[in-house]
Amino acid sequence: MNWGGWREFWRMGGYGGYVWGAYGAVALAVLIESIGVRMRLARARRLARGRRASARGRG
Amino acid sequence: MHDTTSAPSGFHFFHYASPPEFYRLAGKVIPGVATLAAILALVGLYLGFFVAPTDAQQGEAYRIMFVHVPAAWMAMFVYVVMAFWASVGFILNTRMSSIMASALAPTGASMAFLALWTGALWGRPAWGTYWDWDARMTSTLILLFLYMGFMALHSAIDDVRRADRAAGVLALVGVVNVPIIYFSVQWWNSLHQGSSISLGRAPTIAAPMLAAMLVMAFAFWMYCIAAALTRARAIVLERERGSDWVDALAQERAA
Image (cartoon, rainbow over all chains, first blue to last red; front, side, top):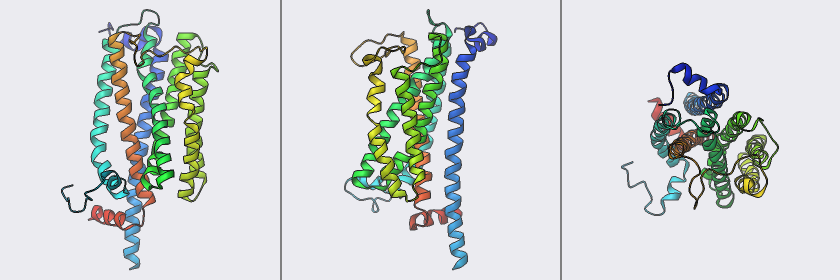
């Protein structure tokens, strides 16, 4: 255990801006990409279903 | 997959190289890989912030290493894997190979960007500058541009098969940049420090720091696999839309 409390933890020995700026960017990138790929997959599935529905409608 | 009659008894690589089989198998693998990535990340963060001690020279700023090094490793590794699949797609003309290359590019670009971003935020407290045009940093920036060039070129060509081939050539040519990044700190005088760990030599960092970095590296690795496979599934559906198997799948899900 390195920290006397949460304040000290967030301060990171005076380097808080650098450390959390780095970890925050990683968290943000992972979050955006995770949501992005799931949405892309969901949209591809929707389009596949939509095509079937329109094919049935025509038939 | 208990239906053994539909599986060819021969070489399984080509079996899983078919888009429907890939789609099915990846769907089974992704949740496990993603969960593993999350668990490893939690363990890595715990080791990195609560077990690894404060660095004698750099204070707490060095903790950026636990995301910087894995991001930089993955940026290079993903590129090599992308170039590998691009070349397989180029030579064998297999659909899944080029899809894998396309699925890896955005994840690799994200890793390259994170390596540069976290490196800048570490460089400022460690060296007094966010950026320097030295060999390591410049070649990593070129890596990011190669990823972006791959994606831009692919999306600029309407015919998908031609886009695969053109972007594949770019990926292959760009692979020479990876050893340049890796060996840049040895070949040129660089502001960037040498490797903390390398084969055949004892690591130059303390054991808990090394453990945190390696666990985070595995977390990043698993994350990249999960992200790229999910994107590959989406691309498979997008490209194979209208084929019998996608229609059958859509019917299955709609029922």
